[in-house]
Length: 279
Image (tube, rainbow, N blue to C red):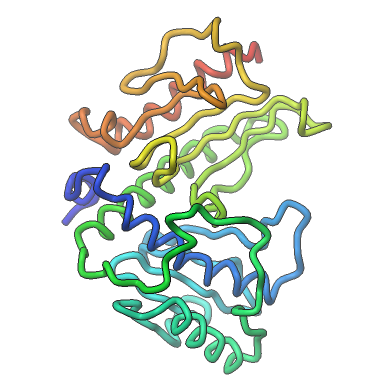
C-alpha cells in the first residue's frame, strides 16, 4: 500500500490509543541514548531520527549501533550500522519485559543498560499508565501512524533543505520523545532564546489539544492574536495558549493529495507567519 493510501487507511481521530502506545515504547530508544551518550545542553543526545526505509525511529548513534522502534508491527530493534542484530516484537509484551530485553542486548554489545534511566520529564497521563503493549493487532492503525510520521519527515526535510540560506537557520529534523513531535526550529536571530525570534515547525501525532496528527507553525515570540492575517488553507489559527497556524490530519485529508497539501501548508504557513513577524 502506498503512503497516500496508508494515510487514509485509518480515520485520524482513531489513532489516539495507538500513538500513546508508540509514544511509550519510544522512551526505550531515548533511554538507551541517555544511558550511553554524553549529555548535550539542549538534550539533543536523546532525540530520535526517522528512518523511512525501516519506518522506524532511531536513536543517535551509540558506538556505531542504533536502538530503533519500528511502528508496524511495533518492534524494538538493535542495529549495528544498518544491519539488524536483534529484534523484539512487542505484541502483548509488558513494558518491563521490553526494558529487560533491551538491557540484555545493550550489555551484550558492551553498552550500559537503559532501564535505570529516570526521564527528566513527565509523560502524558495516557502514556504513563501503559504497562502492556496490547493493541499491536491493529496493523492498519500503526501503519497509518507510521505514514503520518513518514510524510512529516519527508516534508520537513524538504523544508530544511530549502531554507539553508537563513542565518542561523533551521535545526535538523528530529523527533523529541517528550511530546513525540517531529520538528525543526528556525532561528532568525542569535542571543537570548527568550526573546530571539524564531519559529517551530513540525507535526505532532496528537495531544490534549488535538486528538489527531496535526502540523504546527508557531512563531516566537507569540504573535498578537488580535491582529492575525488570514489563515493558510486547509488550516486555521490556534490562539489558546499559543498562537500558531495549524492543519489537522482531518483538514489535510479533505485535500485530493495529502502529501502535497502537507508540504504546501508548511511552506505557505511559514511565509505567512514570517511576514507577520515582520522578518
